[in-house]
Image 1: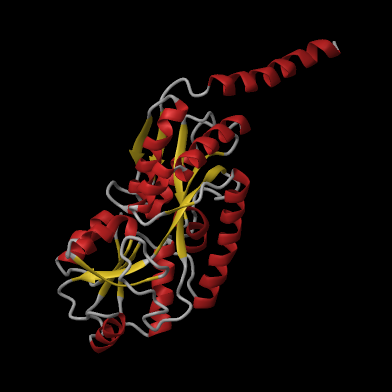
Image 2 (image 1 turned 120 degrees about the vertical axis):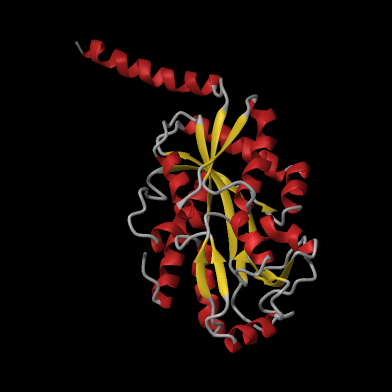
Length: 318
């Protein structure tokens, strides 16, 4: 009887490595939790294209925006843990979301299998050219002199950009009213047309608009490789405002470790390669390529970090 009971278990144990050995045998779906055209979408597609040769399969991008990225992240959390649905995670969708939004339908640690961190990028304060301020100090003074007249964009109250924008308002005394957008690409036209007057964005999506003279950049949280003439906040007189943003890939919790490792190696090998560094660097993303364990620790530690900041600022989940 004992041998009869153990046979199914033995079969399952043998099946897991076999499945990993043949993975992937069909295209992989990559869920991007924001609309096309923003920084997260850009990075997701660069890496998706870059890992296809190593995996021998197409990686198909599916944009599922909404609720500050939590809709798309939840799609990944609830997908079959077979390696054929993965997602791009960010500082917003994972550690910040559960701090800033009520009833987020997933746990950023328990419901995902981290694949690896792709890279990091700074934040950049931008506006349209109709805003009369040319420098950060002029911008701060202009918002104070025009109370109630300046709006700033975010891609949702569950995002790190929103939390940091509120921090910047408190630190500088700026008078800005929050307007939420579904994605960064939806905010850019309103910046250009002066319907909104500020956005703490990642250069990944908007640096090209600054270089083309369609938007103005006032300061970055860390030196920008693609906009080297834009001062850091510290250089512009706002000390201690130096947070960066990260991108990474995740799979649903329960995805076989061998599959996670296969994906992690493909991602790390690409982002650390000369071609990967060049493609990401052109979008102001510094390549990382961390291990799954290192990425898991980043998510855990950042969750505690953003909770402490929200508590300090008196920001409650909405």
